[in-house]
Length: 214
Image 1 (spheres, rainbow, N blue to C red):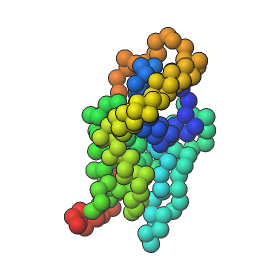
Image 2 (cartoon, rainbow, N blue to C red):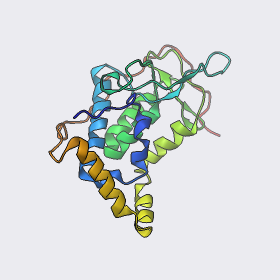
Image 3 (cartoon, rainbow, N blue to C red):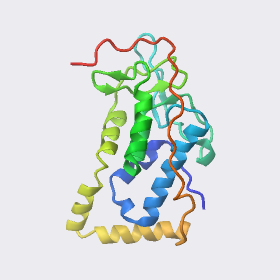
Image 4 (cartoon, helix red, strand yellow):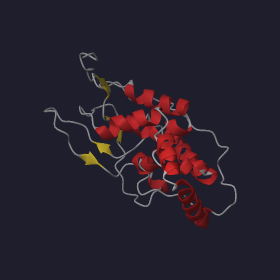
């Protein structure tokens, strides 16, 4: 059975940082395998970052060109028509949950690019070819990254679910539904390594922001 995303954008696994799905061994392995696929796809395609739905670059007037929803991994997605020229630091949020070192390595590889840091931290996105960035910060690209660094909020949600006596029901239902699809056999790929970035965003002469202090 293939684990397939819609676009396989990183944001599609947002809920895994909130509800305690990873308390279930099968789901924990599925979640980790998704990040193996995400990191190794970028390595294999010689991409300096990873994909998630995100605001596009800004033009010379500071206006956002548009929003890119269809960004992920077409080969393992339901929707295969994708725009794959813009990467975003928040694409690492799930990777940080399963392997913080690998996730931070990918995050760092994107934020060291020109114009990818500002007084509010990391910038929204950059083109892979280094010709433009998004002079914008959104909740989506900022808080998700912090959530990933901190390990998600499942530890808080788990305790609340237990106090409300719904935790065991949640685990039973989630485990049962996933076992209907994946069965009870061991998943393939769980011993495969995560991948690290091998190239950086090219320096095309963009000027960094003049200050990174308030």
